[in-house]
Length: 276
Image (cartoon, rainbow, N blue to C red; front, top):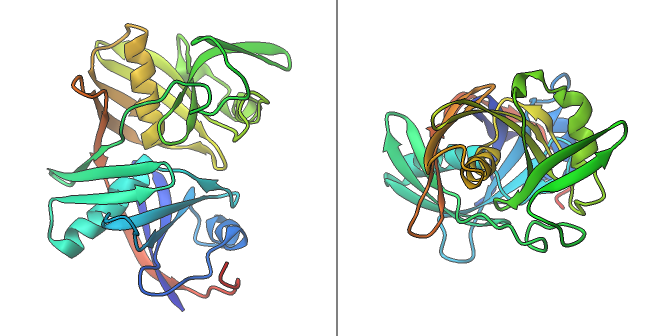
């Protein structure tokens, strides 16, 4: 049997495994089985903590519910950081991910701040299939959607609308996620204003579908709202699962995300898939 932790960041939930001491059978097939909410543990993403090779405290691997691998995950970074801070009795940890290094700090009161780095808008960095304008209009079956693409370690497409609550996310989300413009697919965020420096966001995550929260998506939403002149550099992003505080640091354009990390329960599971 293999131990795991069930954790979540504002309802964006994870099955977390520690593979620093021994390899675990956690490939795409295992991820799909574990993420199944009827026959498995049930989660949006499977998180594997591995040893880092570059001086970071750990490497965080992220597998989506469909078995695909994501470059990074802001909510999961807070959860893993909380575990490592407790283990190391430290106020700061550094996590390596496929999307780059993230630095996490104890923000007090059960909150963790993650430095998500600077956003990237270059079409090759996101990546996109071709060069485009900043404002992109996607032609979809029966409609068209205009938004901005940005990389926050992984690709995002942010659409500003009058009322994010009114968007048929389960219908339009997959169409945008799988649009040919996004060779690696994309996360999709719809945002609308709630007041000064406060926006509403709903998200369709690449490989997971509608989730209650997305940390990297909140950062993408914040930087797009700022670039469009809708907010200042410090704002709150209200998601289905709760609120994240985002700061767009002026000195280096890094995005600082602050929010909770929660442990739901501990358990053991029988992993039958051969080690990849």
